[in-house]
Image (cartoon, rainbow, N blue to C red; front, side, top):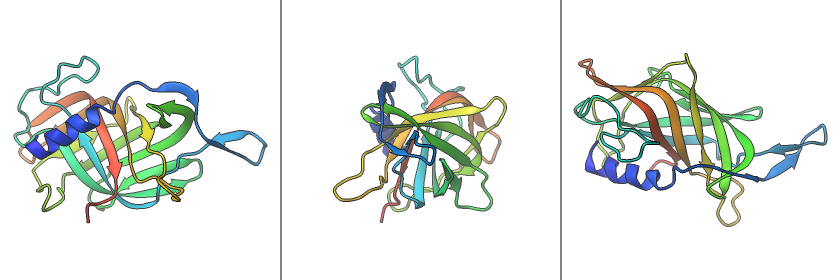
Length: 199
């Protein structure tokens, strides 16, 4: 992992704790029942997935083997955020990638923010975000059996905005980071973030 990505991963790690059980914001559905909402913003955003080459936190163990692939265990991927019924679907923008994250509101709080949960699968190659982050030869690969779970929180909207543009949390399951030479590391837990592109 590059120094820039390492610093970003550490910042996200401080936010990737356990959720709380208080109810989150809701709206009244057609049946008169409260339906929890996720105040995300649709459109083009950036999804970052970060594994750890080393870790002292047993809840976020290091990926193995150490030092593989050479450019680290992180990808930066442009994604499209779409509403699909009660779900939000976050899909790789590139047609050559297949990464899909599907999340829903839980009606609870995650570190004081609206909690979300869902699943993720597919693959995507790092594209970087020049000039802040250069493209590296790393691809993330996530299978469907067993399902790989996503948890996290959405930051509250700011000011008069009704939607948020930042979410983050953790992913648990079998996650692989590999390069084009076939060198691969396997992680059992990583962190993720979703935010607007850097202009």
